[in-house]
Structures are given as C-alpha cells and as structure tokens.
Image 1 (cartoon, rainbow, N blue to C red):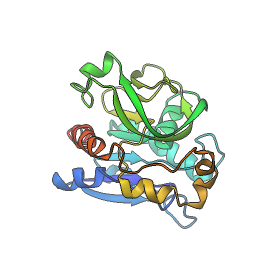
Image 2 (image 1 turned 180 degrees about the horizontal axis):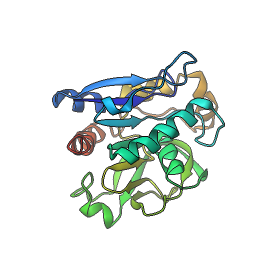
Image 3 (image 1 turned 60 degrees about the vertical axis):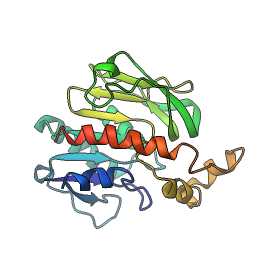
Image 4 (image 1 turned 120 degrees about the vertical axis):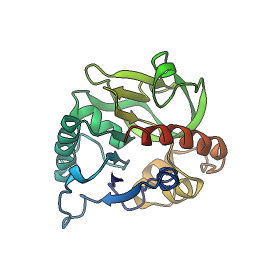
Amino acid sequence: MKVLAFRHVPFEGVGHIGPVLQARSIDLEYADLYREDAASPDISAYAGLIFLGGPMSANDPLPYLERERALIVQAAGRGQPLLGICLGSQLIARTLGGDVHRNGAKEIGWFDVHFTEAAAEDSLFAGIRGPETVFHWHGDTWELPPGAQRLALSQACRNQAFRAGSNIYGLQFHLEVTPEMIADWQMQDENCGDVRELPAPLDPHAHSVRQCELSQVVFGRWCALL
C-alpha cells in the first residue's frame, strides 16, 4: 500500500506523517507538479492522497494547482481518502465548492484550536477535547464546501478543519510539522515577508511534544481510512 503527497515547494514535506506511515508499512511517494518537467501521476495506484502546504494562494492562476484540482476531482469521484494541510486544505475546499479568501489576520506560530461537537464523533478527532495548541502558518482560509462539517476553529480563524463525506479532510493548521521544519521555514526566502512581521522568532519546540502525540493519533486514524 502507498500514498502520494503533493509538494508545492521543496521544503514542505510530510513531517510527522512519515513515521506514522512507516509504522504501518505504508509507502510514501511525492509528486512535485510545480516542477516544469513533472508528469501527472496515475492516482489509481495510490490508496490515498495528501496535499501539503506552500506560500502561494489556492486562488493563484498556477497551472500545476489547476492540475492538482483536477486530480482532486478524480480522487473524490473514486472515493479515495484525501488529506489537505493548509494550502492543501484550501485547494480541496475550493475544488469542492468552498470559497478561499484572506483571513482576517495571519496566524503564524503556536495557537489554540477548539473542536466542534461534530469532531467528538469524527473518525480522526473523537476523544480529543481540546483546546490544543498547534502550529499555524497561513494568511488565507476557506469557507466550508457544501455539505462539509466543520471540525475545529481558533480565535482568529473560524474554519480550522473540515470533513467532506467520510474520507476527505482539510486541516488549516500544521499538525505535521516537526521542530526542525519550523526552524527551517523561518530561514526560507519565500517566508521572509511573514517572518519580518513576527514580533520575535518562533520557538520550534514550544509545544512540539504534544503536537507529536496528536499527530500520531490523528494521522494514524487517517491511515485507517486507506
């Protein structure tokens, strides 16, 4: 069994998701459609698809984002489990009919998320009462696609997680990131504008132990959908 993760920049990998997949003998492959020579993958060869984050907007007229949205339509029609994180969640939400727009404020750093009543009975979030302090890095957000259920919210962003059907998930927050990834992101040229707006450098380790624990639970349950 294997899953395919779509990257939008070289420095955004699966983070904590990798060991969760490995522990279940699930192989991971990457698709980098942002590269000019990248061919569209045959998604029928994969048990599930993961769409990762990136500094661009889901509304940007980028050909590779349009290719990904077409693959999301195909995968949803096939009933394949989908997981979108940050930009990935926005791509899925937009493809399913939800509006993507600027959030009222950027969320960059460690912030609390609160879980809805629907999350209490959800396959991924049941038993996680919250609030939980997790990592965020986004300026855009999405509105719920038609028929989707809101699973989480934060003080600055009312839509932090959704489920569409039984196996399509979007997470606005970055539950997958490791401390090493957070430190690296702050050094990337693409993120320098956001970093300059921060009052102080981000502490990569601030809530990393609990975030790792949560990632093992949530992503382990997503694997059970494959």
